[in-house]
Image (cartoon, rainbow, N blue to C red; front, side, top):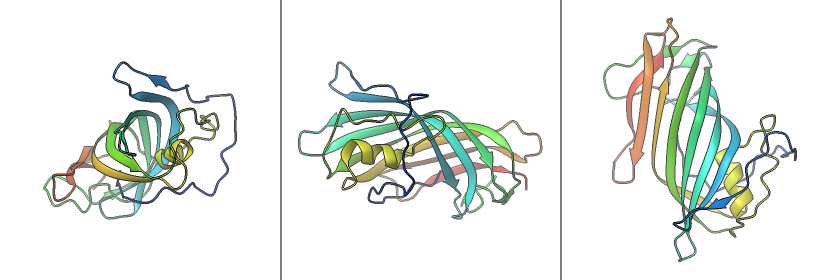
Length: 197
């Protein structure tokens, strides 16, 4: 899942409020961190070459910590993730390491999990934001949830992330892909692939 640093802007589609599959209310743990989730999510997944290679569905879990200086540390966890491939470049097609392919066929299922750590600046934090519009039938992206909680003026700067993808589909030549980035690294590290050839 290619990660990019962009200002938060809500998608043009309208989030429709619904009680079915509504996100769980926020809770505060002993360390003073607010926790949100599960929140039904869905998005498309970009490859190392750029094009979208899969449609993803998942549950989002957020841990938000007030840094005391107007910024908020935030971890986003992607759990119960599944993907369905789109024909074209495989996710690892433009890796610089060995053991990856170039193309993936459409309709191959698999699963994934991962997290993103970063900092939210700007906007206004609303710990009681209404997330009831994020449902199984109208899932939200991470960007949309952040905009609902902090407002559309907020900016999210990613510091690190780690994702692991797997598929047992026997048509694949490569069935496992791992991508990670750390703020101390010079570039994203990609290992393996989800590829037919």
